[in-house]
Length: 137
Image (tube, rainbow, N blue to C red):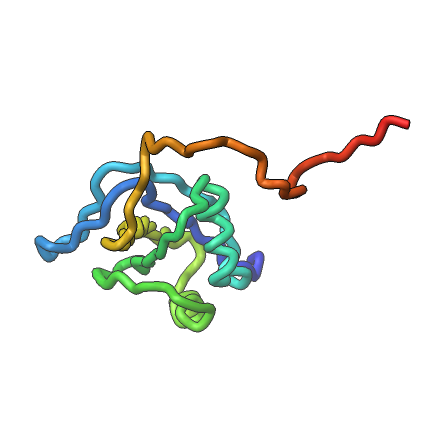
C-alpha cells in the first residue's frame, strides 16, 4: 500500500456550462485528464496552474463535481479544496468545469472617437519623449 491517494482530474474547458435544464451539460470545448494527482498536494493555486497549463490566461472560474455526487461546487480558495479532498479515495475521477468569463465592454457614452479628422499643421511639439539625440562631434 502506497499511502498516497491518487485521483484523476477530468477538466472540461473551452465550452459552456449549462445548468438551465436541471442537468449538468457542458457544450463544446474539450476534455483533458490529468492522471495520478496526489490529493495531499491539491490546492487552489495548483488548480489555477492546471488552467494555465491548458492554455488559458484569461479570467475564469471553476467548479468541481465530486465523484458519486450530483452537486457542483464552486471553488474559491484552499478551504473549498480541503473540504473536497477529505472525501476523495484512491482512483476517483474528479470532474472540473472551467467557466470562462468574458467581460462586457464598458463604453462611456460621452466618449467621441475622432476618425479622419485633419490635424492641421503637423509641426513637431518639441517634446523629447522617445527621441534619441545624437551629437556628431
